[in-house]
Length: 230
Image (cartoon, rainbow, N blue to C red; front, top):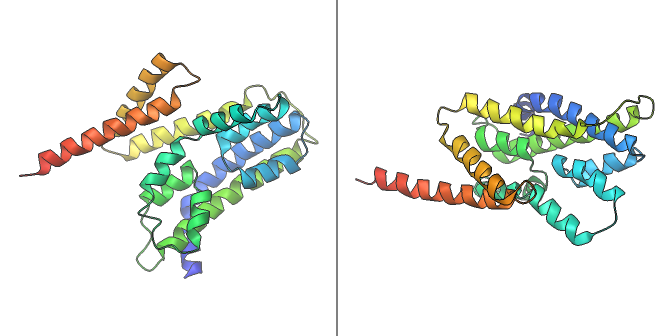
């Protein structure tokens, strides 16, 4: 059962592996350029496992300690996971002891695979999702650690390297756009985000945008149900 689930999950994570190794190494180089030991990115990627927040944490560690500021910043940066979690409640049912780790290890890429890919009939879905999540985290930890270790011997200007996370999300967006025939969800997300960006500014638009997107989807779902009702 485990072997079949691993073999089924691995091919779906290979593209993520390539991206995570590069992004993780970029993060490791950034941490090392700021004077941190390789131990920091290794354990931060293992226990935080939130790529965007890990890049932000670099500056938090170098500035004065403000716990409330750090808390709300982390909430804003990763607020999307609240909505990811709600949508995965049904899929995580009956996964037993795997459920806590599936919740902890869920990232954008793992969510995309576990939400959209249906494993073969003879593969246990719980084990499939576990291996997808575990493999993705291993890629990220390995990349961050290798980047930090290489940072001891390779030195270059890391200005702008944190933009790699933004680049990853853009690539994922276009990939989903090409694979989906219905572009309304993507357009709603873009429209709501742009509106909230203009109203609330770049520092405070994420939570309002998430709330507005959920509201639009809820209204659209009710309208769609009314159309289907004879």
